[in-house]
Image (cartoon, rainbow, N blue to C red):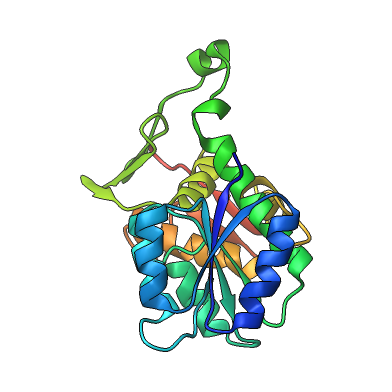
Length: 239
């Protein structure tokens, strides 16, 4: 069965372009013309992914992004050229990726494929072999937070924290490789599963969000540290 992608944009030509290329790749496509239509169809159809224009009349794409985050539906947002604030806010609201208009429809298809492939790998079918699972720890415990890998949950200072999939994957990878510095490109390749596509700012935004959740003082991080001129590394401290 083909995967359902919901395309949300108030411009008919954008919707038609997305439909044409996505259907050529074997996806089933539904369209929504505004934010209210998008929210209703997302709840009714539960698509595998939503391509979402942020700037729409009525219910904005930012509001829809919040709704989709609660439904655990991945989002690729469409933003106007140069609107970095919109990109950052969209990522902070839980969007998985973004494209800047005007965009290449082939790039859209590639990003849809990457996001869905990453989600498939994190699902039950992608579970490690029994022998590997037996060796791998199910919980990573540190002074200020705990990662439950089996339950896919984050607890910080005794409180359960909302942690979207990519934040969790990024934090897990860093925690499992303590003291090792990763470049932003390496993090994009390992967590987002692409190198050419994407923007290093995506990594920075997710690191900022992680720090707000696990660091006693996000402005002076003790765990996820910046390695100037390189990227980021994880320092476990006293566990």
